[in-house]
Length: 216
Image 1 (cartoon, rainbow, N blue to C red):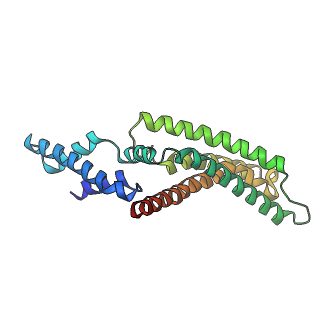
Image 2: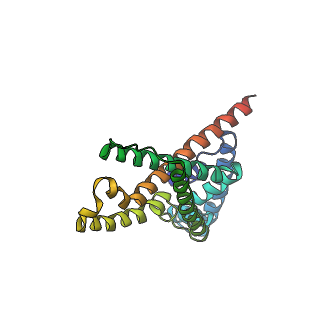
Image 3: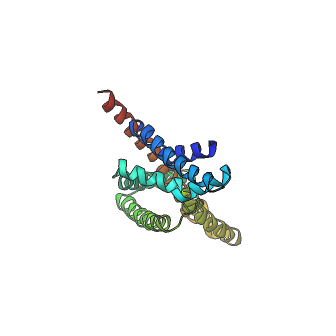
């Protein structure tokens, strides 16, 4: 039964506390009824639990659907937050690198450069999010549904290929230019961190607000 309890916990994770317990009981009861039916049909307990969970659906996708119900605007807000976070992070990295290699210059970032960078980040991140949402709506894969794997692994592979270029033509990437080769993996790491950080902050605040409203 620990497997069943863990499954239900993952479905209701980070939801408002006042609704979470009721949902847990409802889902657990539904699954238990299904398991009992399967046991009557001569399935073992382990088989019955496995089949019941399989028929109910992927816990990560169900959790996202429930979050979308309780917090309908958190994804668009999270996207804006992530774009701003990555833009600020990229600007900080660029400024720090220039200050390190060329402290004698005025390394301030012009506004048009920041705006152009933000536009590019919005375009790339928006495309990636669109593909991600399309895939998770069509496929029920635990690995595919993991945002760390989806966003980070392809860019790490790209970074590995770029490393070959760095070793083949090191003279072309003097000073801070080598950072350009790793813009995608660095940006992807910053994006996924900001994405997860927002989930923690936003959902925690939502839960606290629900608790206060319940008390009042």
